[in-house]
Length: 228
Image 1: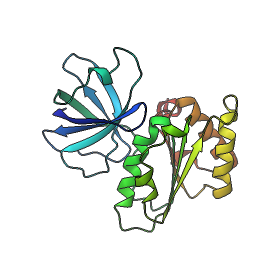
Image 2: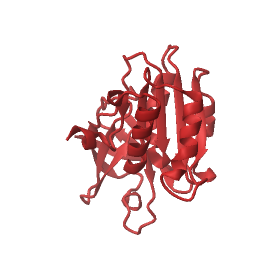
Image 3: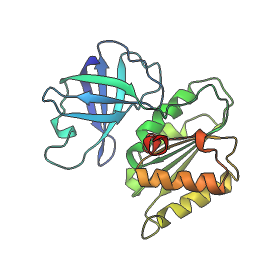
Image 4: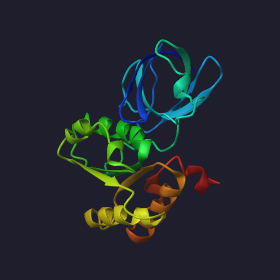
């Protein structure tokens, strides 16, 4: 555990806030991992690290406002002392594999993807990275300028999930877009983040229909489901 201070908070869209935390000592983490933040009142929450690796003694979190009067975000203030535990999670970026990467994020799962994308963007590499981000509303997208300035070996795809009446139909258009760009995923590393049912469904579809290898499809939302 590391003692830390909330350095700044800023809205990124209508419900996601950028929270910068300054740590008393450097946190060694892999892109794609998460931390537990513990408040003085004892309340805690788990959040993906949005910063790329080697960020020193500062980490960035993107925290969703649940609109509840007692939400974690409403209890958090600039200047607060907190405790950061971690890092945690097994769905971290396998940097040494050399295989092309697909990152597929739903909603606020972008913060997880962001760490992976920015880490890879900082490397002198020819590794191909494809990012798909699915949200419910157009206004949910943010940091377009960052995503659109990634190196040319990256492709970024924004996708609205409200084009069909229900699940799993809302996944169909996204899977068609994915399969049109990548007919076979046997040689890819795939990272999934978001609601568990979304990720489980996509994992099943890409393994069955696009030949993705189950052991190369990473996601903490379903990790324990397949390891027990």
